[in-house]
Amino acid sequence: VGLTASTPAEAEMAVSFEVPTIDISAFDGDDPVASAAVVDAVRAACENVGFFLLADRGGVSEDLVRDALAASRGFFELPLDEKMRVASLKKGYIPVDGCDNAVRPTSLHEKFSCSRVDLATVDRSDPYYDPSASPQAELYFGEDNRWPGAPDGFRDAWERYYVAMESLTRRLLRIFARALRAKGGDDFFADKCRRHVSNLVALRYPPLDRSEGAAIEERVRAHTDPTDVTILAFERGPEGLQVLPDGADDWLDVPDAPATLLVNLGDVLRFWTNDAWRSTRHRVTTRPRGGRAGVPSGVPSGVDDLYGGDRLSLVFFHAPDYDATIDCEDVGGAVVSAERPRRYPAFRSGERSHFAQLVRNERGLPDRQTLREDNSRGD
Image (cartoon, rainbow, N blue to C red; front, side, top):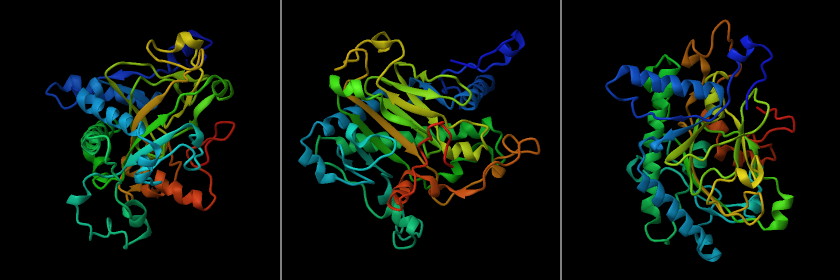
């Protein structure tokens, strides 16, 4: 999938849209050439498609990923009344049909989520964390994570995975800063995420029967993420996840690559980079390109030629400190200049988070993740 080029010169300049696999292991190594190659590869992916796969899971162990996914699967297989003991719209369980959702039809999924797992070690009298200090603190820290009593080891598996995602995200943010030659150096982005408000979410999509599969084209509607970075793990591969980069003429299947994690950029990073980097539209479809032949081997389906099976993903939605100022001017000349003037005003990161959208929902305001029929965005 790519831009149409009518001449050899245009063909040479045309962007090839694909979701690349990148090995970032050399970034912190002793070989400056290999480290620079990592930065170049990440920069190209962020400029062109806004998605990339991390080889060897970005250094996160297979056991951590497997245990977190297995714990999630075990939880979702519990009886509904047991899962409802930890029900919460923010930090806990939401059943099928449990809430309105402009991105994921509520009848097609259930979810469990948690936020920061280290709050026992922070000073809760700090106004940033004190729910009585401000509406923002109340929004993010007004309730604690709700942990289920079963399956055994659930909390431990999730907390270890959450910590691993924090570490991986810090590494990615350092790569991003170097790729953009940020004025604050390699820690430019990480310095604004030391008190981040990130969520870890397990999303389970029950299997579709034949009549449902015939009527439903999208399990997740086209949207962008309100994060700076999102990291995904899959139980059985992407299973219908597609992306539509700006300038591409058709949806692109995310490849099923073993031993990888998937990274996508969110709207916060798009605004921070003044549109130099992509926050790419994506969706989950029931119709793979090429019919059933396009479904990876081993993926069961209740619907011929469709991704209709039971689908489980584990998603780390990373968000900077809620009071961090997102201003492209702070990044530097790589994203804003006389030739590339500012496109967006500065804002506080917490104004555009998933939790902020819950407040917007209460006020009857549209979901900023979703797109209009012509794929334009409501920023």
